[in-house]
Each structure stands twice: as structure tokens, then as C-alpha cells.
Image 1 (spheres, rainbow, N blue to C red):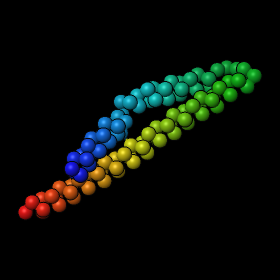
Image 2 (cartoon, rainbow, N blue to C red; image 1 turned 180 degrees about the horizontal axis):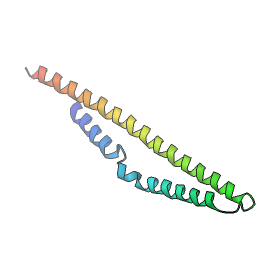
Image 3 (cartoon, helix red, strand yellow; image 1 turned 60 degrees about the vertical axis):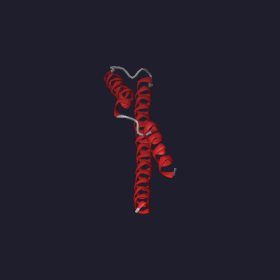
Image 4 (spheres, rainbow, N blue to C red; image 1 turned 135 degrees about the horizontal axis):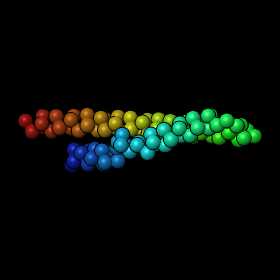
Length: 103
């Protein structure tokens, strides 16, 4: 009973677990677009009464938020992976115990 519960928990963790790299494609694309926008803003010939500078700062802030978001997802993935590893080790210990009890 306990082993099947742990196995079910492992399956649930895998299903809700780490975000695949393909799921970051939109964030990576947004970052590239923002970097392109920043380059265009920096190449603009006028300051536009300080608005160009403000726009560059806003773009830099948006890029920073993208980096923080990706780092947060990575940290969560690592936590989930550690949980999965603990459950797997516990499941292996229970299997060994069950084998010893059968003898």
C-alpha cells in the first residue's frame, strides 16, 4: 500500500514537475525582442526630451524581470527534482524491505 502511494506521488510530481525547455521559448523570444528594441532605442538620433532614456530603462527592467522569472522556474525545478529523488530513494528502500520480509 505504501509503495503504491509513493509511486503515485512520484507520477504526480513528474506530471506537474519541471518545465520543459520548450516552454521557455516565449520568454526567450521576448528577451530577444526586447534586446532588439533596446538597440533601436539606443540608435535613435534624438533624446526625445528624455523619453528615449526612460524607454531604455524600462526595457532593461523588463529584461531583468525575464531573467528573474526564468531563475525562479529553475529553482522550482530543482526543488521538484530533489523531491522526486527523495521519493525514489524511499521507494527503493521499501522495495528492499519488502524483499527481505518475503524471505
